[in-house]
Length: 142
Length: 121
Image 1 (cartoon, rainbow over the protein chains, first blue to last red):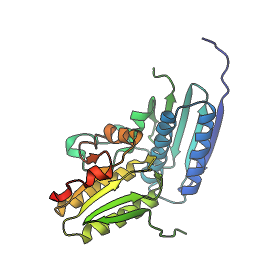
Image 2 (image 1 turned 30 degrees about the vertical axis):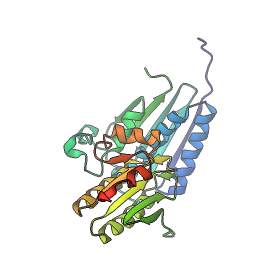
Image 3 (image 1 turned 180 degrees about the horizontal axis):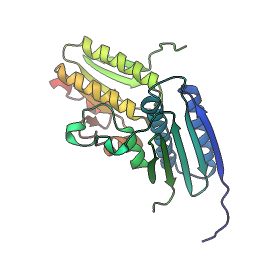
Image 4 (image 1 turned 135 degrees about the vertical axis):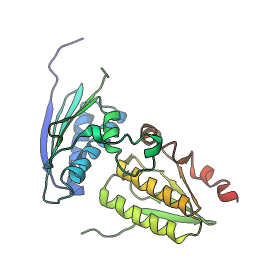
């Protein structure tokens, strides 16, 4: 095992809910992940999690206010990819989101974004007051 | 600025609607809303709607798209019909499994199998 420093790619962007801009950021991050040899499965997981995180920010955080931004920051090296997704809302209690996988909740059409993020990322947590999601994908699970 | 080009292709196969997606990524909220409106209209126009939604060519799917599928599933059931899903690639199947929606939907390997025996034909 070597302890050579890993090249790190980082960036940040403030986005409005404009599909073309979101896609451009997604594609740019995918390109960086590919350069760091992330697998197709990892890239699928990260793209989905980012999409869900941004959409939660726009819809639930910013309450679909088209003038409000979601900020995305990332740091990617060959071992892990770390993301911060921050909206302009007041935050929420992630523990208060009902479990969408319970039989009685299966037919409710919303509330699955956060559970997908938790399932696909190695780590996902909200910083107080709940408008700032930090999530990390590690190539080798802990 | 949005042009309302349909995001889906619908084929009528002896009374069964087979739906395919134009895009490989079903992520964009506005597109998903448009798909939902179109599907709801078609389901509501049928007496006992039978629909197969094929995911052939679909690479990414968001939770908002899952929400639309749930809505369409409930609506077809309410109208005495049935929704079946098919051609789901393994990475997307995992999304259904994680959310346990594989328990809610009738999922078939391909649209031929989904169409087979649909509605007691």
